Length: 305
Length: 320
Image (cartoon, rainbow over all chains, first blue to last red; front, side):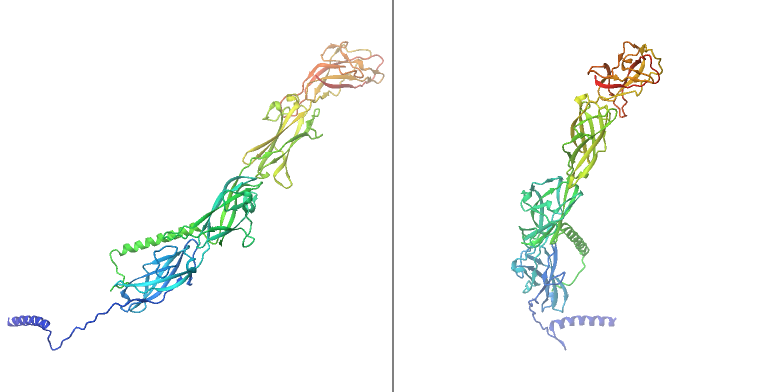
């Protein structure tokens, strides 16, 4: 019984003694708290490297009517540890390292660049990716674009952008309506004027003209020679005055419509860019001795204006 | 401090994974659509198409003519056939090969567009000949030939017949060319080859005219006839022409019969104006049979003749 009481008293004493020790901070051995305030380090990023993701060149090789993948890489460091860098943002465009607002023509933004791997406890590799539309501006800054990457910290500060320049190549790309149908015609009758519209589209990023030639049309009975197909840039040009196709192009200026001047789509928008188009006008002569459905091919080649 | 590399699984994580997956597929599909629709490059092509519609064939001026003498009338041949042709140049702007067939017909205007072939009024040619013209890929020279029977109608429309060529193209449109040509009147007579009186006694005459002798109309108009004859030369002696007598009625007396003369003295001489032997007007495709009528003959034998006797009777068809 006493042993029990003694044990209880001993425990109570210990508990009280602990309280006393804490409050008094006295003991045979003791310690002091050492404190310091680590200030927030400014993140820094090494110079960026921008490149065409498909062929790893330092120019962006646009794809006609489509998207091309480009990337900018850098390594960002924060001496507080890379975990202190909350996000990475990037832009690539014609107006410096931090273009805004985003549009397909001049400025692409990426607010969620990837931190691909840790270099060490303070640094991370960062990659910003962009899908560049075919109409990206080649004319401003002589086709030089700037990619920039910034590291944003938890405290809200942002690093100085890491930048690189990359060439934006010019793209001549032409699209055409799939079929130029003249409907039903009578043999031995020529159109009087070029009235059949046929659109040509600019799927590139520079103003373009075009060259054209054509094959003979093969009919169920007989053929229609290429020269019976005639083109003009104006509606209702007399058939006799329109340009006749030839089976092959005779030289650099053969079949060239120099005043077509079809501009690229230079609208600044985030929407999928529509190809610009201009009409051409066509007439057909039908010789005698042909019958039935006829089909031939017209070849168009984009040339720079 | 937030570690941006840390990935924490929360209750919404599966939903986010599905959402990302769905968006990825949607983006991929949209990308595919764009590529397909655009189909662009620096060079490109369009299919130029046109449907050349059928042009109706045309046939130019046609010429019908008698083939044997190249005249613009058809001159039937007594009891036979005469060759006639119609020519035209037919054209199809879709090429002459588009003309599937050429058919021709010749008909007298009175019968109009003949539906069936008849010797009297309508001749058909379903296989006219077409020949190419050098350097011409749309026109062909067409010839339709006909063999006209002797009884081709001359009376309707004053002998005018119409020749027509139809060029039919593959879709069935037709062109027609016509020309008119005269079918001449044809007087043509045929006779039985022999008028045999059998055996007779010298110094006796037939009492009536009973010996039948047929005349045939191998022309295309109604006809009468004129007749004369030569003397008959016998084994001994001759029988002069006037001993041969003819009548249109069987049983006429020998005395009343018309005696032949050695020569015709004038247009009405020995003319049997009431004979009125019509041409064959039967509409048939068979070779036409010549209509015929009878004449009735008697002979007188003077005395002092013996042996076989033979002479000649000449018949001439004349218009009724």
